[in-house]
Length: 285
Image (cartoon, rainbow, N blue to C red; front, side, top):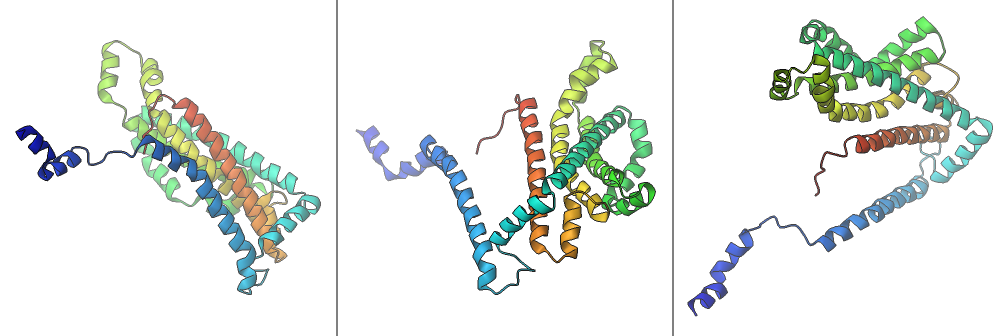
């Protein structure tokens, strides 16, 4: 009887509640929340598009400042028919992908080489830091003076923009490799090449993929800067042309297509990262 009284006593209730203060919600509730996320995102998008369509007119904002959404749609069709939007989009996407690939390759090579040679890293670190701090887009006019109004300036700017995040990420990963694991490998008479491919390189893959995700978004910026500075092809050229014509809708449409290219590149890298890092468990919230 004493046991039953103690079990029903209100003084013991807080103790039971405090045993697991961060108890997760029931699985059914979590599934409902996850299923509602796309709906919430879609509602936010519909709200933004609705405000874009009706708010400028309600506030009497001129179309040359903020055009309506319907104006952007009409201008997109005109650009497709008269401005050869497809050619400009393909040119920008091609240069962004090429610059991203070359910048990623060079960044990875330099990152691994400097990571394997602490002496050369110390010798070159002041110059690497200076180049990293220097705004890469400021080199675009210089490259135009050197190479002319062609594809080389925007390609080189893109390579520079992509190069440094990847190199720095890999270099940092090489510095933080488990030294005990390397010493153990050396105790088993593993060569330097074996240590790199079996220990250092696998440990650097997460940082490499993080750098690639950053570089995928920066590649579009690099190409656009090069096209804004000079040239007669690309979405950056359309932005400059639309600005000269006071065609705000053209500028918005070109920015929209640039954003789509950047999102597509990011998704591709994210998909590769998911496949490459499938062995790493993800935290569930």
